[in-house]
Image (cartoon, rainbow, N blue to C red; front, side, top):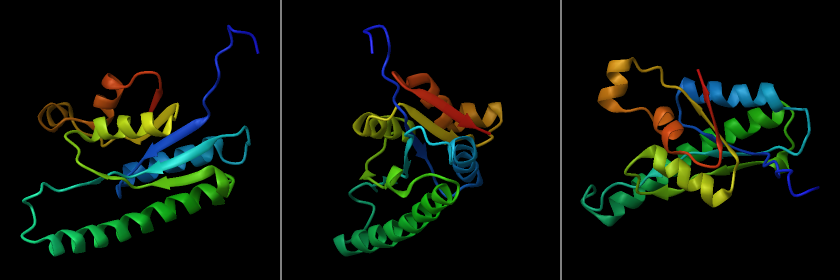
Amino acid sequence: MNQNEAVVNRNILIAVDQSENAHRAVKYVARLLGGIGGGFRVAILHVIIEPESDFFATHEEKEDWLSTNTREVEEMLAEYRQFLIDHGFAPENVSIHRPVRYCPSMAECIIAEQEILEYGTIVVGRKGLSRKEEMLFGSVSSKLVKIARNCAIWVIE
């Protein structure tokens, strides 16, 4: 490889939740890249938002909530992972990540995870907000497009 050739990062991070939009994003990646080889690695990400320290009355309540939430997220991520494997991705090339962290902005947390994992592409589903709703509530996909650097963003509708 000469020095003018860029190294292609074939690592794809799919940021998901339990919405139909996230499911469409996983399906898109499965149908586009599943079974073609090429060394693609996929990480399926769901950030568990850590509640404020005073949200729960006791530490036990917080641990119970975290345990229940983590179990539900792991089930969802396992289903998405199996879907990708069923569509041609090698099991060793599909991982799941479910960090628990404080998120002032979900887009910022996704970018932080993308940087930690060193993935070159982020895939998200679009919520389908109207322009008014997007101005009032914000949009994770719009913010990702605005703040991302050194990576590609695929927004799946």
